[in-house]
Image 1 (spheres, rainbow, N blue to C red):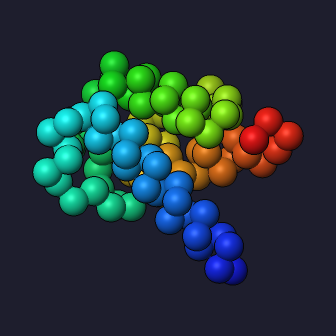
Image 2 (cartoon, rainbow, N blue to C red; image 1 turned 30 degrees about the vertical axis):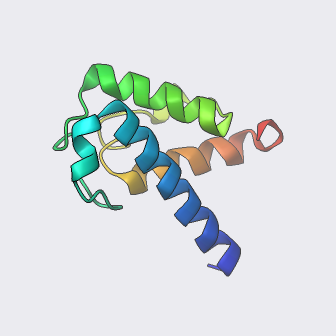
Length: 94
């Protein structure tokens, strides 16, 4: 992984955490990292839909519904992988 990839990961992580905090104000007092269980900090099914829609808006991507499940939303790392997959599938839309 080169420096540009690392910087993009850090930017993506920060954006995703910011979206999470905006939907779950109680999470702002927690340290959320790549491996934090998002469902344990309060993400439920309704908030998960809002979370995905907000990420699609911020990144100007559309997720493949077949890739979305509890495991793909469990951690910041897995959400970041969803974003990366959407970027690969539709590179001209970003």
